[in-house]
Image 1: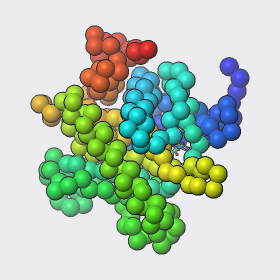
Image 2: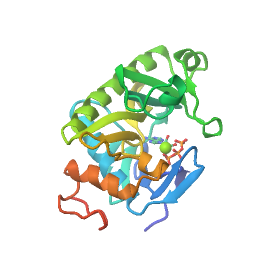
Image 3: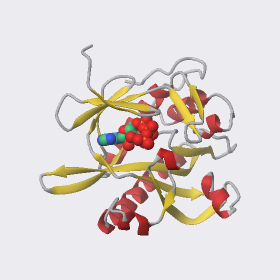
Image 4: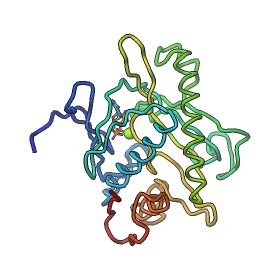
Length: 253
Ligand SMILES: Nc1ncnc2c1ncn2[C@@H]1O[C@H](COP(=O)(O)OP(=O)(O)OP(=O)(O)O)[C@@H](O)[C@H]1O
Ligand SMILES: [Mg+2]
């Protein structure tokens, strides 16, 4: 294959120049990292699963009118996306308490929150992606008040869609993180859901058993990560029902 221009290599994905101006190819690696990359491993098949699952969620979001950067899946590990200017914030939506909010506020893991809570973290690995307030975001010009309002609305729509989808297959969407980007149509700016939506960026608990089906399996050494992601894909009908966890992921269509 012709060599493509590398745009950026991150911890989990690689961006290449796309075939048309304003597009990128997003390649999903098998690398898993946690705790700000202090813990690392290669999980065979993870990239294939995340590519397919992110496609599935983004296509579903588009079908209910939520704009995303996704254009087309190209192959097992790559998807064509719209290039955008990533707003340097991780937008986190929490339905139940887990992870950093438990430590910060002394909440018990799994505690139901009074309503979905949105948090913003400043995307900077060297600082450990610190939690920031709207005040910082506006004062430092990372996003305008209008952007912030639009980001909250977008995040809540993603939450409604993802919660419903997961509930339908017996999974609780505990929390998730998205990245949002700006695209321009002539002089008009629009915000789109960018990056990925996958079990790397969500907390997913089985409703009956409480079993974790997300990256916490890797963070806490709870078993095989690819098996957990395969289970999510299988329940959603993204993988054939009879795939055994030990076999490599096979795509449906
Ligand atoms: N549509 C897009 N246009 C431009 N950049 C994008 C788009 N979607 C995702 N990105 C960026 O591509 C990179 C994906 O790589 P990866 O997720 O592996 O990065 P990372 O190691 O998590 O680092 P980062 O701290 O930059 O997120 C991220 O920097 C993400 O913000
Ligand atoms: Mg990332």
